[in-house]
Image 1 (cartoon, rainbow, N blue to C red):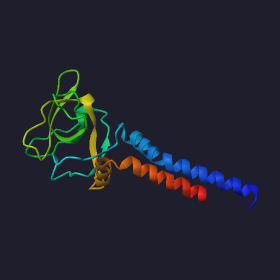
Image 2: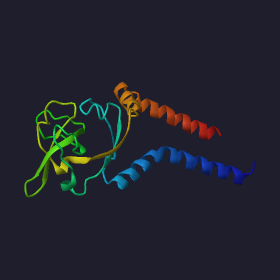
Image 3: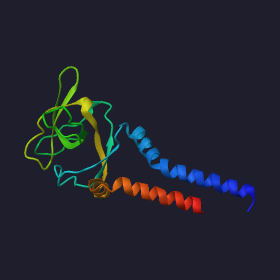
Image 4: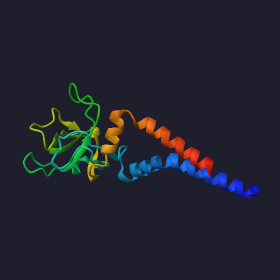
Length: 177
């Protein structure tokens, strides 16, 4: 092998290594821009939206340009938009994780929109009205159950060690070749 071939292999290996580490971030960044939301995907971790949305479903979100366009249904008909919102600070003991619930009512107070939400599987609406600025996005798609891998790896504490091991194996494989 001559020097030019070695340089070419090193450049290709470096490119593959960089792409392997940045590819998922690039895809996520593209989804953020395309779907107009800082959080374009979430994994469902509760049964509050069953039978329509299940634990482990990966949801895709679209940002809200015009909150007046969010469709409100009723408790009975379940036709309102399903939104994901940040509940922090809205009521005492609100969870830190985003909530996925259906809009069952809305109103405008002259300055902003407010939304009342309820899980399809819950008996009562959520304890507070949701201001438009807390809405992360509207659910526009889902991949059933694929999020179980993320739930398992996060809950078991294996996510970071697995990523480190896979990264090391990738680096070793590229350097070895």
